[in-house]
Image (cartoon, rainbow, N blue to C red; front, top):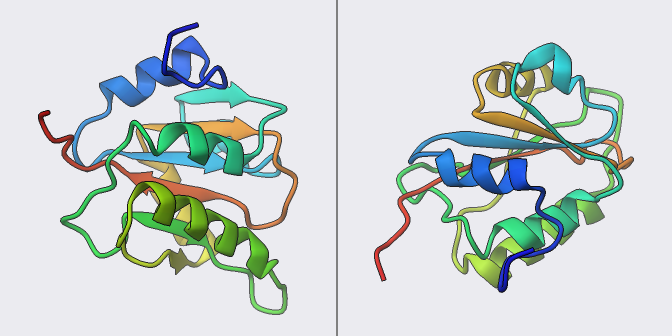
Length: 144
């Protein structure tokens, strides 16, 4: 445990966030996501919800301000629906830590998988909500 660092971080997740550079992406995946099939770098966070991880990550993580879509979610497959409360909850967390960040973008399922394939890492959570997957693009961390 470290003072000022969320106890939700495993050593592996904290080290991964630290190693990420500007423009790298991390996927926070729901329990349904095929993380091990799409990326070699998978971190397990079973039992945690994506909301909890966003609350822990965003105080330490600058969203990329050089792109229009630093936060991306998977769009529902045609004929299926997503609970709008999921994105609204993420948006509230984002606004609390990164005021004025662009709106969440939505991409088609297979386009999301393609981005996950080249992401820095995939974090597999215990979140069981459909379409709860989110990609965060890291920005430049300002010097203090």
